[in-house]
Structure formats: C-alpha cells, structure tokens
Length: 318
Image (cartoon, rainbow, N blue to C red; front, side, top):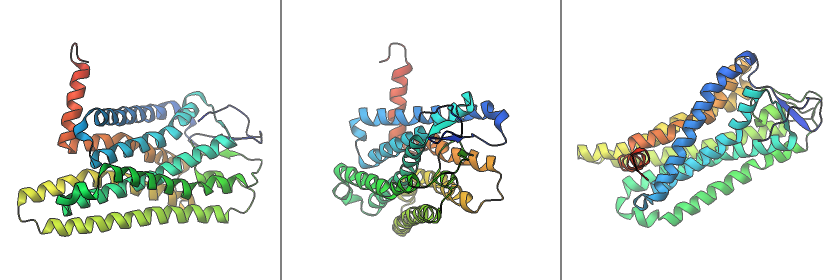
C-alpha cells in the first residue's frame, strides 16, 4: 500500500502513527516483524511451488493448503510493507482511498481465511468418516467451487465496510493510532454517527466466526464419533494425526481474531501498544507457522518439500 509523508491536515490523507508510545523502538520492533514476514512468504511460496510441481499432491487437501497459503500471503502483504515503511522510514501518510482499499483486502482476507478453515474441516470429515467416497464427494473441481464461494462471501460481507466509511465525514484529526487501516480505528475518526459501522463490523465478526466455528465443531463432533468406533489403535492414531495440523492452525487463528475484534470495542483498559503489536502478530504468526505446521505433521508433504530443498541446495542441483 503506497504511503506518503503528508501532514494530517491534508483532507485527502490519514496519518498512521505506528505503535504509540514505542516510537523510539520502531526499528527494533521492525526486526521480528520483518523476519516473521519473510519466513512466512518463503514457507508459503515453497508450499505453492512444491504442490504445483508434484502431480501426486494434486489432491483436495493440498489444494486447500495452497488456497490457505495464497490467502495468507495476500492478507499479510496488504499490511506489512506499509507497516514497515512506518517503522523504518517514518512514512506515516496514506491516502483515504489507499486506506479504505487496505481495509477491504485485510478484512476480506480474514473472512476468506476462515472459509478455507471450514472447508478443511469438511475435508477431514469426509476423509475419516466417508473414506471410500472421498474422491466422489470432494473432487478437485468441487474444491475450486468451494474456494470461489468463500471468495464471493468475503467480498459481499466486507465491501459494505469501506463503502459505509467513504460516506462518513471525517474530523480535522485524521491520525490513526495503528500500523494499518483497521475498520474500527478508521471509523472512530468520523465526526458523524458510526453506530451502523460499529454494529455492522461486530455482527460480521460474530456471524462469520460464529457460523464457521459452528460448522467446524459439527465436523469434528462427527469425526470424534467415527474415531471412537475405531477398534484398531494404529488406525485411531492415524485418524487423529490427520486432524492435528488443522486444529493447531485454528488455535493460532480464531482466538487472536476474537481478541482483536473485542479489544477495539471493549478493551479500554488494554495499553494501545499491546493491542497494536498483537493485532500485527495476528496476521504475521499464522502466515509464518501454518506452512511449518503442515510441513512437520504431513509426511507426504514433508518428503516432497525435502526433495526439492535438497535439489535446490545440492551441488549442481537444478
């Protein structure tokens, strides 16, 4: 997102402050942020490359991993480069249009991310509960259609946010105490009534996360019921192992999402710099850890990634 070092009085711009109270430490804070972002990009692009090259990985589970990787790359890239411009070069200005565009992409990416996690839970349910019909119920074409439905849902749910804000009058104070244009952080700058904006953001957060978590819980309750019927210890362990990576990814994603949403509205007692650092980590940590989690937990993927890594770094390898 383009950043311009303009004054806060300019009616066509907002000013992102970075991390209030920790301005002197901006450079030091940028070091882990940059490392997390680079590791996340390397991990996700490696995953996309390996799955793309290996025809044996052209299966629903790996296609969903690729969809998750693309979503995470897009969401983190919508905020991190601009945040680093603030932390490194003190470039705090952002146009109103740029701010609303950034808001749309980061929130749409979050909703899309949740949709992919729901589809992955459904994939695990079919794999464990209906293994003989797996390829019939979930062919690759159906995964593509589910991904498209998730994308359309994200656009339809999130597009009203920047559209509603674009109609709001903004006060002379256009300073956003954040590293990126979060919906509520921008809404609070308005001189008008933001009740609709506030309620819409809260409803979307709970409808999306609530409905998605309900579907995930339903999938896992059916999985647990099926698993408890398995008499073989080895088969039981294998069934549980196929779900652990997905559960780890959810534990990283959903709690931090709820924390970020609630803090903006009800977290007056939480120090601003704590909230902003955690809000940034909410986008950085899943991007960094998810490829690592799946790379470690999935034997087939781990072997393929190891094979390509060895080829890349071996003498004369290509």
